Amino acid sequence: MSDWYVWAAIALMTLSTLITRSGFFLFGHAVKLPPRLKHALSYAPAAAMAAIVIPDLVAAEGVIDVSFANPKLLAGIGGAIFFAATRHLLGTIVAGMALFTVLRLVL
Image (cartoon, rainbow, N blue to C red; front, top):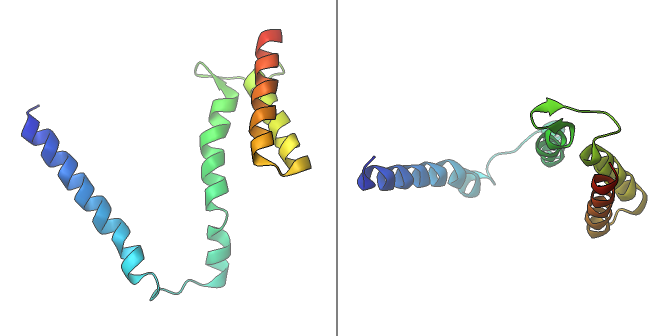
């Protein structure tokens, strides 16, 4: 692959990203979404995060592992319980990582 091909691909991808995303900034005020759709879209960030995190918690080396021997899953559950009780994000990260470290060393 030549250098000009790589730079052309980068430039075209940058241009396509700018074109597709600038429409929301330029015409976003003119588009009115129904209230039900706005409410449904409010769940999109949580759904995207779950789609990224949950496969990592339950899949160890390409194999699904939902047993009590999976330290990632147990630490994730512990972190979720901590967050539900305290609603403290930084504390959740610290508690989850500490629990994962302990479980990894014990299991």
